[in-house]
Length: 149
Image 1 (tube, one colour):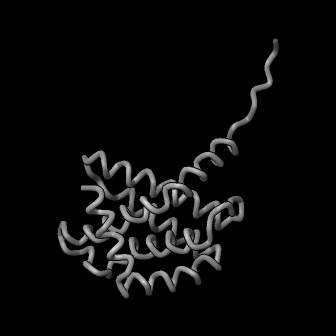
Image 2: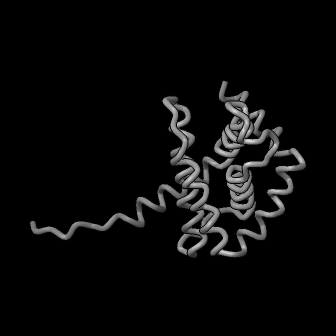
């Protein structure tokens, strides 16, 4: 089933509307304030969504990680991410926070299916960057204990 979502997301990523978001993403990445604002909007949208599905929780966790990555990228503290990956990620977030997309979000139930498909595709293609960022976070916040012997 996940492969079906990923394939659908790949198809959506080739849609002309998503390609517009991909074009806008370049302008957003170049402006740290806009990038930070975008990730704040995405975070607020994610925390409003409630679901009992464990798969959704996993998607939510990865997106929260990407949002932290994006904020670190925006403030300049993390730049070890491929430009193309960042561009696609920002385009996905733009798509996610914009209510008018291929299937508008205000349509009950089906309005979020295109978002979830696109997110599933993004996660499958961005997992390496997410893992790398998580390791960076762990090392960044790790402070050796100075103890007595």
